[in-house]
Picture 1 (cartoon, helix red, strand yellow):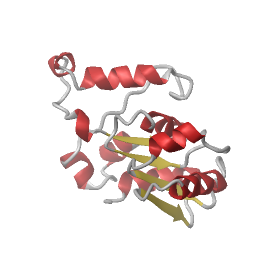
Picture 2: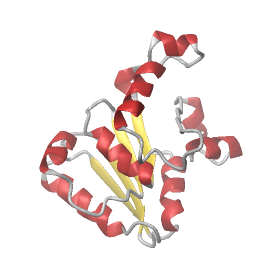
Picture 3: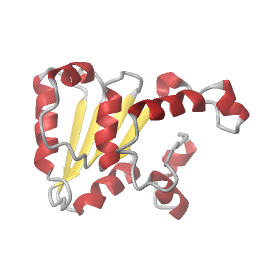
Length: 166
């Protein structure tokens, strides 16, 4: 989604002027949801390595890598954020419907997380994100931000996450 917004000129200029957007996607697959999370982390390691730079990747500071996920990718992003390897995480319309395991809540404590979800999401109910944000805040994470969007449906949260300057 971010790359399509950049290509169409709909993303804020700061997204492509101040950041490197890396959007791995498996050829022939609709989602990363079924992929082992370790494959994504290995890709990130390669991207930030000398081998990645030799292959044409721009220099990236691992300490400043942020994670962005939409829909199933947002669910995946929450799981990956528990590794502590990301400076922050933007989570748009995740499909989390049940409670997070206590260990995941503990690992996400103090992690900067920004959630966006539209009230009228027709794919994943906003109640799952409401519960997740409440759980994280109750556990003491003061670095959680949440935008409950009045409209936009499922895709609206992803568009808002990729186009808002903040």
